[in-house]
Length: 417
Ligand code: EPZ
Image 1 (cartoon, rainbow, N blue to C red):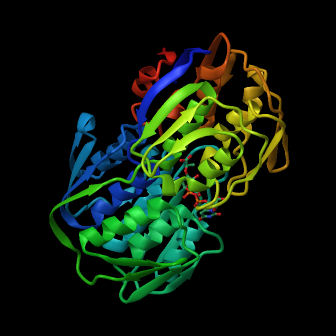
Image 2: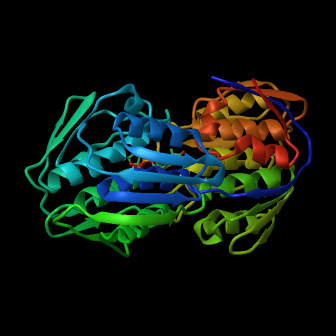
Image 3: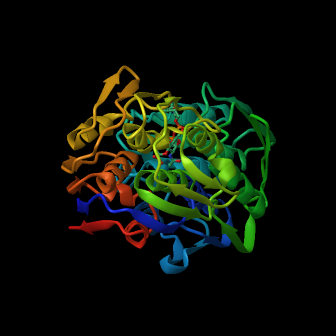
């Protein structure tokens, strides 16, 4: 793994354009495998998770053409004969679990390794598997391998015990080839789900969100498409991240964002003293101190779990002491303890982290253990005095497109070794 050497304290000024959403494109790529034909995605983020998915496409012998600099990825989807995806490629990459819904839907069978993912929690897939069973699939889960099989899939009502982004995506895929009208109740509301719903309808499927439920009319025959193009929704987590960086370090104009997707946090920060100029697609964030906040992370449209670690860095500079309570994952806060090495004062108490405000960050060496934690360490290093070394910077490359180009463009002093 690589290291980032950061010389902090510079005022960061300039413009950062938001790219396509990681958590959307990782659901859109496998969805293209549900049809035969050519599908081109635009606004594809330049993140290492895309490379991980393309390695799986190579394994499945799917043809694709990736124009990274043009943020375009074309997939030539056709019938897949290899329905056994038991490989370390899957174990290290959580989004590979989307192959379950896609392959069970189209081929009525799949054997796949248990998907891995960031160490922010146990990351079970029980909701996914229960949903597949509700559609009539046999599920054999030995702990390391999942075997899915179905004579045919029959539409059903699927009611998740709690909102789950991944399980909602997976059941949309599978229900698209189940006979009849399926209804997913208590479906996740994230914008990335709506991006997938939009794409499925462009492919010719019939998927409709009605408040908290999603209705899917199953197709009898495999769909053939001619030449489809689809643009990925802007990444709301990346957008919030760079707004917070501007509030921490200088003046950053964040463009190509969708304000309606980040409204809850942005309005909260503005109401608590953040210097923000807001429009539907752009936000100018200027260095400012926010008042202490008590935040509880929630499913969309609440304050997302994925921004908690980065928001925490802003609150460590805040006016007064703050608390962030995590309600989605069990282990989101390890990076807060790592930040204490930069002269922060954070304390984890059960599922909350108590943040002492008004801290002066002082450079040090810190170790990243997950994607958003890594981003929080880098942003703290950019706001710190002296030098900060962030080990395992590769984590941040998983989810922040053209990371070094964007940071350097606003004056960040960051080297990678
Ligand atoms: C997606 O993860 C995102 N990943 C995560 O982004 C994001 O934090 C999360 O949704 C927010 O909910 C991708 O889209 C690739 P969940 P996912 O199913 O689908 C529990 C990032 O930093 N659960 O919505 O894995 C689960 O343990 C990453 O960009 C079950 O118990 O999350 C969690 O407590 C991290 N059983 C809660 O539900 C299941 O079968 C919500 O998880 C599924 C989930």
